[in-house]
Structures are given as C-alpha cells and as structure tokens.
Image 1: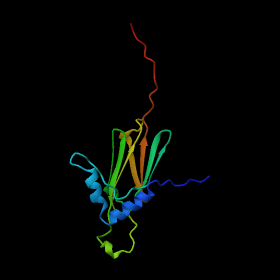
Image 2: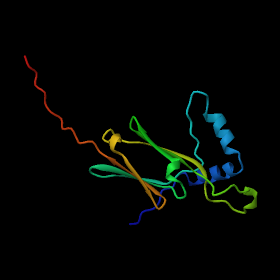
Image 3: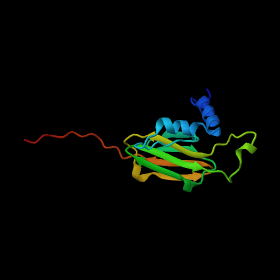
Image 4: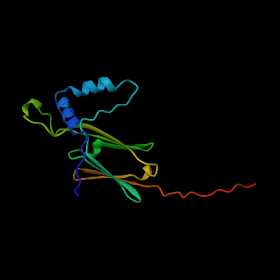
Length: 151
C-alpha cells in the first residue's frame, strides 16, 4: 500500500493563484471577510504542513522554501498555534514580462488547534533547508486520584 497525498483544495488553490495574479482576489476577500473589529489574515499561499504526535511531543514540519526565518512569527494562545510570515521576491520585477508564474510570494497564515497536553512554554522552532520544524513537548500526565472526604 502506498501513501497518496490528499489535496482537497488543489482546485481552489489554482483559482486562488489565478485570481491573486490578476489582482482580483484580495479586494474581493477583504470586502467580504474583514471589518474594523476583526483581525482577518489573508494568505497568498499555504505552506504544506505535517503534524505528528509522538509519546512525549508533537512534531510539526512546514515547507517554507525561500522564507527568511526573521519573517516568520510563531505564537501559541489558548491551545491554538499560529504560524505566519512572508516570502518576498528577490527584486521587484514586472509581472507582465513573465510567460508563466507558479512560485507563490506574499504572506501566509496557518492556524492549528492542539490538545491541552501541548506545553506552549517549551516550544522549540528550527529552520533548515526550507523546512520549519516545531517541537512541542507534552505536559507530564497527571494521573487521576481519589479524594477522600473528611468528616
């Protein structure tokens, strides 16, 4: 048996890239989703992410080639891990000079809910060869105990 990559948003991603390239998607999404009271982040691309649970930790790997680590922000709040950043162009170039553009640029924003066992205080992030790796240790398990009532 071989693993097959599951890509439920492949068609949507193609539409998103084309509409973004034409400059139509961002104004549309900003108009529909955002207002003055919300913090809506629009992603221009979505890094592929693997999340693995091991006995004593969670291991998250995200493909972020071409992204400078100083352009990435990682936060964890109320059990939600947020990874956001930006991949910039090497230099400003006129897009109309290109015949084909497939490499994504711009901001990205990913959020993941993690169980209460994730220890946000001990997260370690490293980046190498275009892969961001997050190691999130688990809290020590607290065993249930019986409590006696004193009279």
